[in-house]
Length: 370
Image 1: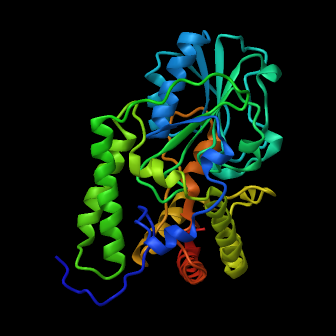
Image 2: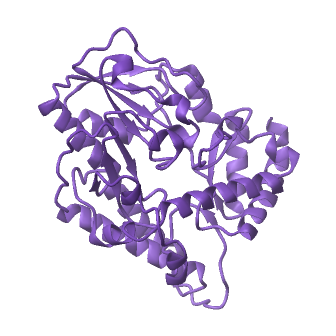
């Protein structure tokens, strides 16, 4: 165990850590997620909400086939497959302004699954079932209260909340059309165990960052185990009581505004070299960016920058490692050259400025790979 308790440790990205009490109080107030979407149901995870609504639609609305975008994480595809619905793909990825929706081939037994990548899409993306002839499910996990989500005309919407709230679990399901919703599921023992691991990792990471006697491997082990359990085999479950409580007091508006403020601070601080690699599609007016997305010239440059950032304790993410047989060359190219770096409530203006300097150094060092 690391006995050094005097040094505050700095790192950027990776797993969420638990927020101090004063910080949580500062994030409280009006505009909780359930005030914004009052007729909604809470779930333990986004995949639980997906499984629940697909089973419900299959049994009560006659769904037989679901259309999903080509650019989609495999965990979500696995959750969709559990419903037993036939799966078809339509071309969509973060770079498309007008996705290749399967118009003309849809019927009332179909359901269309849509995704707001990184919060880049606004009201221009709105579609209603009347427009295409079948029910629509939208996933707004990257911008739960953006203009598309709040003005949606979909049959059902859902969003994972633990990606934008300081929580170990949580997701929400609602119907913009006012359709009946399946009841909230019970909290399962397996999900509660996963939440306990996740929360332990968050608390241990906070102690570690504050210079406490915690070895990094200790919180990483708990965090990774919890994440694998929450995102994996937990199935359908309700939300933990801890997360239910904080969802009733935390302001999603403040949390979203923090992301936008940090995003704008980064753009003001970044050098021209760094700005050259910021994907411009994320600058949609009125939207709250999920993170700062970078797009490099090739995989080698991306991987080189990523390795350099990790050496400086910045931990970017890749959304997502897609299968190589994906029928979407543009989506595959984007997946192999992108990096996502968070800009959420965890970070101060000084953190953002430090990040910009580190990125400038990392990109300069990998310029030969451009």
